Length: 73
Image (cartoon, rainbow, N blue to C red; front, top):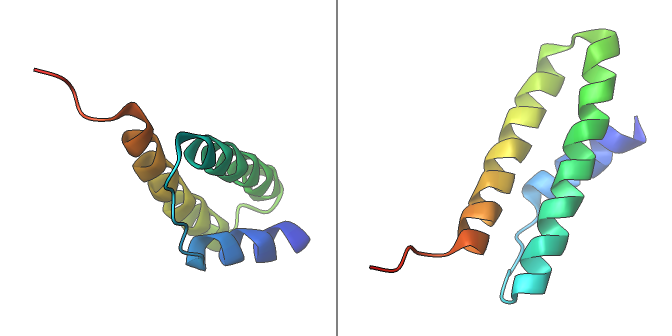
């Protein structure tokens, strides 16, 4: 149950993503956590794990949106 605590901690943490490198590292870290929680979910089918994965995925999408930047016109 170590991964669940890590996932909840990451979900609550505010991350000042000022550099591109920090965004890339944060995105990879969230991806690793999501995949680990997914493995637990496959075994238990606990709906709370699914909710946790959804929240982490939303956070990851925000990080990736900032990585891509604004489209130039």
